Image 1 (tube, rainbow, N blue to C red):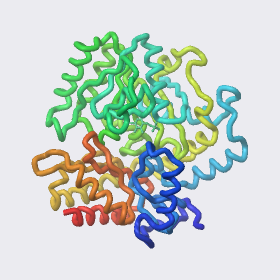
Image 2 (cartoon, rainbow, N blue to C red):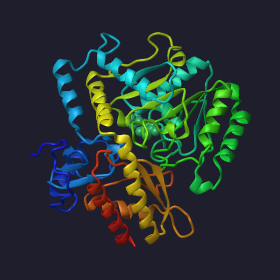
Image 3 (cartoon, protein in one colour):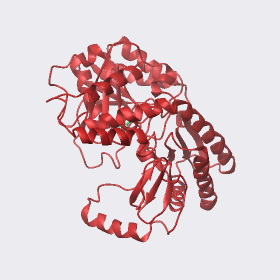
Length: 443
Ligand SMILES: *Cc1c(COP(=O)(O)O)cnc(C)c1O
């Protein structure tokens, strides 16, 4: 039995077919025990993981270009995260912060207030999942503005609970057959340069006109947007789009919420992706990269908004669990001590040069986009229509050859890369060698 953590040899190594015999057996057990409604990207079961590799129960080692969906940015089982978790588990596992509080919850809120954009006075509150953070951000915005309408965007993803399903754009698999959805949610156009070839200002004008004419600016409590859309396909809006939406919100007393659950915590080469357009959101939701793999989420924002809710209006049994908070403090300290913001920029450089070469060879790669260690390619047919079939072939080849990659996109035709920011250049290049071979094999 191997131990995980950074001591796991950072090397791709296959010793069986994928999936191996033990994973095939476990998949049978899974089928009997686990609801088939829970999806699955790869049919291999995990034995251990560390840094940027994952060891399966058959002894195969995979290069991780997914980070468990942008979570293990500091590497899997990072040293400081593990140390903090162990120490906290020895002290106490839970009290409920609303019953008897503890320091680590406060310390995480202090960090969030310090690291998020803007020097104004801030407050934070902690929750268990991204969706829960989004729900609470909406609750807070409604309480503060005493308005009800909430605006979300085409291709947006905000979670799978009832309110966040309503905010999420894509029907299958997230919403299909699960209605009715929460009322007073409106969807407006999103800047998607590869598809619309329009300026950020032009698309923002359309979105703003829709808000003014169809909803009424004075009815809108909040506008929620991912600065770079995650599940929607790593869509980077054209310059100026977010700023125009932000200015509209500001001029009309609307709370501007940046959903940075996927883009936050160094992922895009900044603490938060809002910084790329110098945006200072009123509220920011965080989760994924925050706590090195433990479930923790936050809402951070202007003190007057966050404190406008009645006492007891926010909370939950587990929100800001002490072990998750200890993990977050470890994860944030790893980001700072290893300068993972700078590393995200280097990773982007490696992706851009490799993917540009790949695109010259394979014109099915219609678009290369993203920021930092959040990069994607969108695959199209010669006539420009989405090529989800090729995405299937390429990802299957990667999975069978020891590289974990994920897909995304409203049309299912995007391959997204979310490596740990702790990944070595060698390992990243080897992962991209396999992606290159996958395109050659698929053609
Ligand atoms: C993943 C994600 C969520 C939902 O987070 P969960 O922890 O899965 O509930 C919300 N918004 C964005 C942008 C996400 O990427």
